[in-house]
Amino acid sequence: MNSSDSGTQSSRTILTYRLPSPVRMDCAVNFNELLPTESERKSFDRKWRDFIASDDANKSIYQRKGNRLLYKSEQLIPSKKDSRPALLLVFGNPASHSVQSGMFFSFKDNGKENRFWKNILKPSGIIDLHFNPSLSADALNMERRDRLLNLDYDGHFRIGLCVIISMPSAPGGKWGGVTGIQKLIGAKAMRRLEEVERKRVIRCSKDFLSNGDIVVSFQKNAWNSLKSDEDPSYDINLAKAGRLIGKMKGCSGVSLFGVPPTRIISPCRDVLKRVLEQSR
Image 1 (cartoon, rainbow, N blue to C red):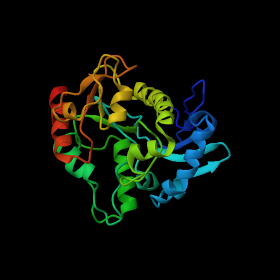
Image 2 (cartoon, rainbow, N blue to C red; image 1 turned 45 degrees about the horizontal axis):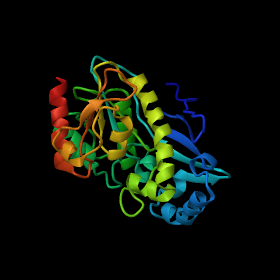
Image 3 (cartoon, rainbow, N blue to C red; image 1 turned 60 degrees about the vertical axis):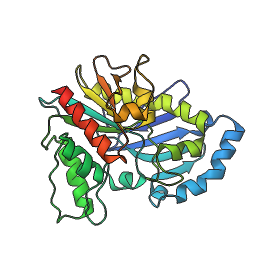
Image 4 (spheres, rainbow, N blue to C red; image 1 turned 135 degrees about the vertical axis):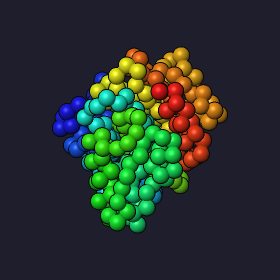
């Protein structure tokens, strides 16, 4: 995928995006199409200030310009290939501070590794990313980004990371996660946005995945958007039991697994171990 001019268009043009760097997406939402009624727009306007104030990073990520909402997001799909099968990890939406840091699940300011890498991916056997704890958080984030892009890590898979909803939000609280985005734009607008976001993820998947490769969904909206029509709807109990298994919609021959959200560390890690075992 060409990072300089990539984009997604629908007949309604709700969302457009481009990839100016291997990890960053610059996105634009058309308010007239996402929020077509006066009541939806007024509701959004009432909530906007509180949403922006919910995370310090939001002010540097979001910009309102006329009838468009401009924002930065994240997607990491390496263009390099090797003999390993591809594994695409799909999350709900980005954490605002990670977008600002330029890396998924970024290191803390004190250099502490995010629990997603430390407590989920590494012990599950998916990937082991070594790092130098003496480096600054910024340097650690850039090193991790470069290792992922250059496939410079131990593990059975070639890893890609993306989100089903591109709008970032706080990692928790009233405006946190995908729930916070839906609270901001409303349920009807969320359904409109999910449709074009699904097409974006499928497009990047086709560039990254081949027959026999795997997609893992860590969140309800991601599973429901990407599953084939005959697959079950999201159920947290099925996810915890490792039984949320299907096929990626629009990507023939690609398996889709639904695992518990990353905040439920042990079940998420345990189900990921099963994904690894089934792939061998």
